[in-house]
Image (cartoon, rainbow, N blue to C red):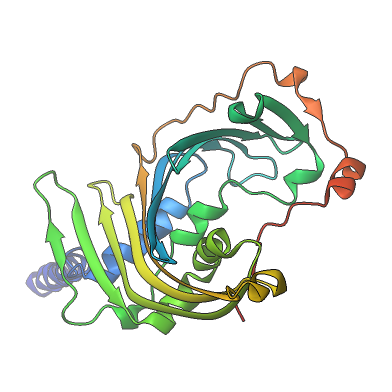
Length: 291
């Protein structure tokens, strides 16, 4: 009897020890970020704020183009998600607001600055994805990037932050879609000849529930643009551009219930058909490509 009790006690002790070792495994910067990104990416509904500040120098002129996005989305894991987006940007002192809503059937857009245009198009549902910018930033980073110098910083509000410097080529590989979008904004209407990235950084803040609270990326760009034959005849065939991009996604109470409120009177929006888009020249998602 004593032997049996001793055996049972030993077995229990071993199980308790194994459970303790497993549950108390050391949290690393890699596991913290990986688990948070995966948990956040699995959400079926999100409420996010996104900012992107792009500072540029070209032809001796400096300018900053800020952009803010307010987005609510539900049904992200279904075939017909509902997504409302309010985007504001400013250039040369002129502010422009664009409201967008998609429900799986139509893509609705309102542009108050252009005579309060209100249109809808089923054809654009396949072309435009309001979640694309978010998805192009929120990445699970390879473990190899988390060197010994990378550490977890515990903040006073209970969140934890990990900051990582990423080699230029690796950053371009991981965030190619996002970088392509940034370069397209600058190079629209021109040919991109040379391009280089520098000073790429990623910073991820995780809340107490294990979700991503804030995801930041920043990088510098140097590019050479070909301005076309007409500008070349004027001695302005090429233009050198330097740009700094800082982008931040903030998740508002991730995991909570999200309500999507579209623009009013959607039935009154004028429908644009596939034929209309073809006549206008169908908009492209990426305006220029980097080889």
